[in-house]
Picture (cartoon, rainbow, N blue to C red):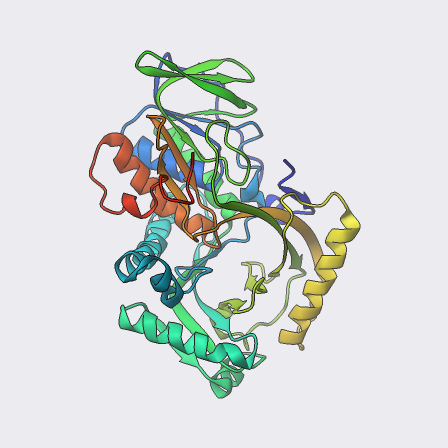
Amino acid sequence: MKIHNGSLYWPTTTTPFTPKTTYEKLDIYDVVIVGSGMSGALTALALAESGLKIAILDKREMATGSSSANTGLLQYSNDIMLHELIGQIGEKDAVRFYQLCYEAMDDLERVAKKLPNEVDFIRRPSICYASDENDVEKIKAEYDTLTKYGFPCDYWGRNEMAEKMPFTKHGALVTHGDAEINPLKFVHGVLTRIEELGGHLFPYTEVKDVFEDNDYLDIQTSNNSFKAKQIIYTTGYETPPVGKRIGADINRSFAFVSNPISKMNDWYEQALIWETQRPYLYIRSTVDGRLIVGGLDEDKPEAPDSEEVIQQRAENLLQQARELFPDYDIQIEYAYAASFGESIDNIPFIGEHPTKSNHYYLLGYGGNGTVYSMLGSYILSDLIIGNRNEDADLFHLERRYGVR
């Protein structure tokens, strides 16, 4: 599956990740993780910190899948607003889900600070503006709900927006405690830390099938076989080698990265920007003063082969960005398309397969993939070690939209 195409920005900010050594595989691993992206790296880190013998297998070069195209917006708010999620799954579960996302922001910061390299983790507020006047009540309802349950946020009317941004809208929800990150530097740093803890990394090793072998799993790959007590599939938006996702929708989105902008002092704290309409436009800045602008989601799973299509979508996004920032000299320097996944019930896939013991999944589908990866890594670590995790039932895979 072609999960991205075009000119990617993040790989230009760092060097490719290469494992420090060519590992001789162990006779038996405690856990094998399939996939070296955000979910795989964070899960492997949590397990390695617990002292388990782990290996990460990836069919590509390490961290060259979706992590290379991840736009690096970290937000506790979800694509489905809290007041809407309460109507879907009930007050207790919906609020707890949002709390876990909020707590994951602090966890991501703690991980970032412990890494051997700079990953450009910067705390930012987020501004979600009403795309049209009809969405103002929706924004206000979400503000009331978030405030009721203690989540830090503000509501801005037109005048407040005009004072703090170079554009104004009918209203906006401002959430606090979010962040931006260079996702590729972050994953590279996590992989480096895993190696320091004794984990083994095997690029260009594609898992073909997994069989039961007495008390162990026999993992057949494109190179050779591995034995493990447990396996975790963190295959992102590609089909896992074992199990079938029920209720997963794989689409594609477009983005461009601009030239460096000399001044952004009229942009309130360089907040992350998104909107209420679906699909939504989103904008963030980078440490070297560029804009990352994305959106125009399409109901197609693979990135287009056509560079012309990617450039056309980038030009459309550029026009929208210039309307919001009319005084910025915004030009396109990088443009790309990438696959992304959503779950029909707006809940990521985290947990053990319903009928296959010792097969686990962390598929962070939704607008908060990195946040889901963070919270999911702790849940899976508890499940595998045998600790009680009271939040695991929120994400269990036996639900209507899960894994079979």
